[in-house]
Length: 240
Image (cartoon, rainbow, N blue to C red; front, side, top):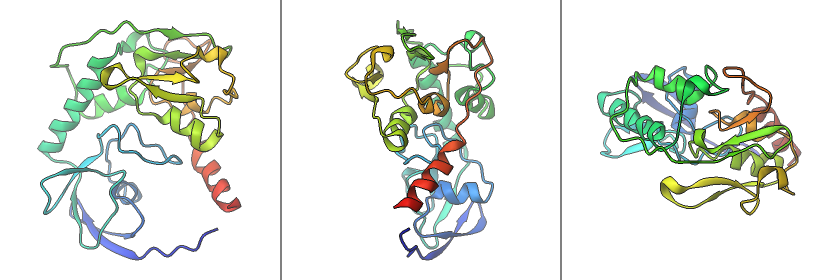
């Protein structure tokens, strides 16, 4: 195991004095101090990429909003995690996520167990003010055990990262740009024909929505189990 050379840093988050290691992010410290910052692409055990932008925070002295999951703490930093400005941007991000795909909760197997749905409730999202795109996307049920419903995908890339960083298979990747971006298996092959997929199911259990689910589940049954990641990551670090 590599020696920890990080220094101790003090900062304020929402007016609370916090102590942290200099190699920690604002999100790490906030979670250690039970301060809620919404996230969708973050999950303990995977590298953060700051993709969903829901964890944007304000930092005193800066006009920019910075993603808490990839911003390192600094000595004397003063962070605000909740303000009318942040609430406005977070709701706008959620609205765009809902409008880009076909998130119909009542017929989704992850209804009641969906992080996107839960965050919408927590942040008080009551309606969508931007036009729905209503894309016609496929449902890939070619895998023997799992289903990929691209209508539910929010492009958080948790599946891509866990398959690469933890399983080492790198079955999943991104194809296309902007709202046309899709998560694809191998070289855009049906999941059931993938030669690299090990069938471990890690991608299914880190997916925050009903985009990746197990077969044979009726609406509201698909509970995800992502708690295995911190353990696997720790075991891997101790071997190095």
